[in-house]
Image 1 (tube, rainbow, N blue to C red):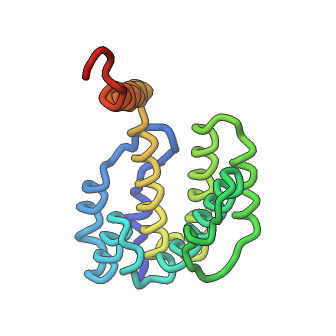
Image 2: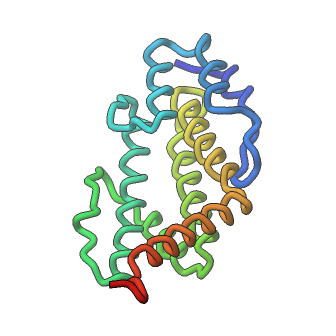
Length: 186
């Protein structure tokens, strides 16, 4: 089924910019347009329940994202001298360019830039997956995944990061003080 109006009315999204619609607003706007089956598929994608999805787009997105996550786990495991196999998720297919994108991302010294490069790879994956059906369900679901990514980046604020770091440092400090041997006691 084609969803020309819905896809054509989707706002422009950019990683790092505040998305113009919430996930709930997008789901609400799609409800009267999508078939009941496609609406439920959109809901599952927005909720991250990819294992329950039935569409070709969602299945391929799940597989390619699993490959990306496996590549990340392999790099991290190698850096830490541990076995990556226990973090491996099965997936169908294999894309060499995803492995290269992960290697390129981990060549960056800045963890934030590394994470941005990984999400740009995810963005590219969903654009590629929707290219064959841009006004069909694939186009709708690709926008949904990109909206989730855009919201993730919009939620990353420097002040919130500083607060989280301060709380983590204080937690470690408190644990160290509580675990320290008492001086002058019996």
